Length: 441
Image (cartoon, helix red, strand yellow):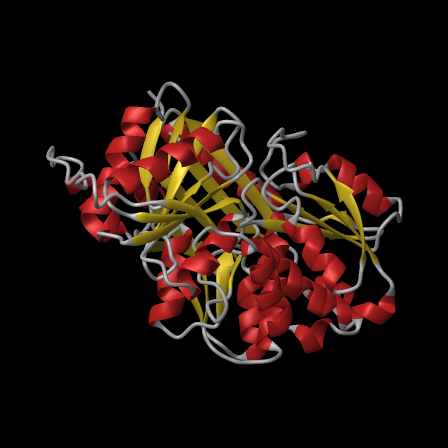
């Protein structure tokens, strides 16, 4: 059975791991922990999303909770409204970048952020309680629609960066977007049209039929890359199915690695305000270069956006995110937000600095590898193998050298061991990763 419950939500394959009885149990556990009176629900456009969301809504109603149903919306849009609206929590039905046979419940807390590890543990304990507080017949909740969620989210972003985005109206640029037929199919073109650029839509039907592997990486975005290299558009964006991650590319250069999204977004914010920034152990050292350029500290956290979000909120951080194309700007939204990331990249482009910034960012080789079928991980053989490294054990094991690092950890979303490495010397990195695979494969 494929079912994983972590800070990244409850994920499973349909009909095997994720079934109606499982969904019922987890919604009851969430209700037992948070006692919400009013929640917001939404989903991405996977074909099995509607019945899952309807079941989620119905269980909440049967427990006496009022539900506002936002329908198909990007994940960051739903969290934005929980954070700024009168909600006690929310559920997003989305498996993000997982293949189509997967779906998931992402649990949102009352502050508009995903659940922390202690809250996940509380839910696990609540799953063991077998009595259910079903509401009496005259105290059941109702489900109502929640319109204009996307439009309001877009308006908030544009209002925040209105001055920096204003030059785009005069520049007459063309932007091509690949939304993988996901939840951003309407939202991202809307934001771009509102700032005055011409939008070329690529896979923006919002029907949940992924035309290529849904994780936004250059190797999956060949159509977008071709259009940019041919000069068809000045700028390109691509998202994952639920819209919390974004990659970009430029005319003549093609699609860039997902690792470039965060340092460019950091640069955009740090030009206007100073403060700590945060990212996880697996994210590029390019972000350290940006932080040093503006003289601000960079905080490293375990993988999982909740860890980055908590670091930002607890330590007064102004921007952070992850190297998968996720950007968190707590002043507006305390979650990875693809719309926000696009707006920040557009501000750098509008100021005429994007190409120069990309030329200045230090160049590193990165390797992302994996070992399948691994659910547990003992780091001791690895730390014993490299006694000269600085060691961090907060998330698997992170080994750091002056110009190179290695991060090995079990995935939060799949039964695999992830291996990430970055450094200046490609041959040294390949040797390093090979040594890891020899230890654990």
